[in-house]
Image (tube, rainbow over all chains, first blue to last red; front, side, top):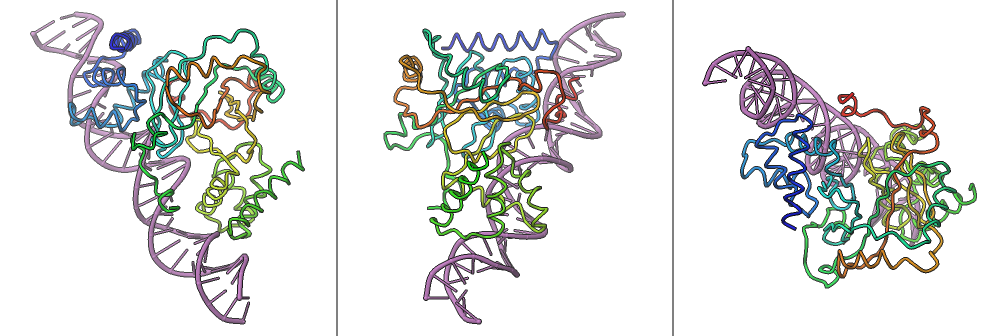
Length: 169
Length: 169
DNA sequence: CATTGCGTTTAGAACGATTCTAATTACAGT
DNA sequence: ACTGTAATTAGAATCGTTCTAAACGCAATG
C-alpha cells in the first residue's frame, strides 16, 4: 500500500512538471496528503489538515491544485449526496466503483469485477432501447447500504445527524 | 405514457393524504408538473414554471414538497455533478439507472436489465473482498457518454459552457 | 548570481443552491 | 363557521465553491 501511494505521488509530481506547472511547497504538500488518503476527503478535510503546516493557505489553493490534478486525469470528483453536499475527491485512477455507507457516510473503493464470462449483453440491450444511440464513455456504480461497522450497531464514521433528520425525530 | 403519469400523480396525492399532509393548491400544482416530467428537473426548473401560476410562490415551498415526496419514497434525488451543482429530482420510483450526456447534460432513465441468467457472482465477490461485511441496500449506475443528438455534432440540450472551460480555451 | 515573466498564492468578496426564520395564511376536522 | 396546526411566504442565513485583485515566488535566462 505504501509503495502504491508513493507511485501515485510521483506520477502526480511528474505530471505537474510535464504540464509546466510550478511545484510550489503548497502543491507538494497537498499531493503528499492527498495521494495517501483513502477516505475520499472533501476540500475542507484537506484544507483543515494543511493549515497545520501552512497557516496562511487559502481554499482557493486547495481547489486550484485539485483542479489541476483533475485536468491531468489524476483525480476524480464524487458527488454522492448524503448529509453534506461537499464534493469528495478520489486519487485512485484505476477503474473502480464505490460503496457508500448510509449511516456513517464512509466511502470504500471497489475494484471492477473481472470481465464476465459471456452474458453482459442484457445491459447493452436495455441501454440501447431506452437511450438509442447513446455512446457510453464510462460507467459509474455506487453501492449503498451499511458498512460492516454500522451494521453491527456501533457508532462509527463521521456522519453528523442533519437538521432535517433531527426535526423528524 | 400519459396514463403512467396520471397513476404517478394519484399515487403521490394518495400518499400525501395517508400521511395527513395537507393538499394545498401549490402542492397539487407541483405534483402535476413534476409527475409528468421526464427531464429530471432542478428545483429552479420547477420554481420557474410554477411562478406562472403562483407568482408569490417561494423556493421553500418547492423544496418542502420535494422533501415530503422524498420521505414518502416517491422521488429520488440525483447529484450527478456536471456544470451545475443543482440536485435533479426524479419522480420515477421503478428501479432504474441513468444515462447522462457529457455535452448537453440530459439525463435518460434506463430500466434495470432483466435478471442475468447465471453469472453475476463476480460482482458480489469483488465487493465482499474490498468491503467485507457491507450490506448492499441499493445499486445505482450512471452511464456517461454522448447522447444520440450530441454525438451527431449538433447543438442540443441546455448545458452552458462553464467559466472554467471558457478560461481553458 | 541577479533579473524577470508569468504562474501561484492569498484574503476576502461573490456566487449558486439550499435551508432556515418568523410571521402570516389556509387546510380540514369538528 | 371555528379552530388547531400545518403550510406558505419573503427574505435572511448558510454551505460549498469560484472569483478577484494584489502580492508573491518559482524557474528560465542572461
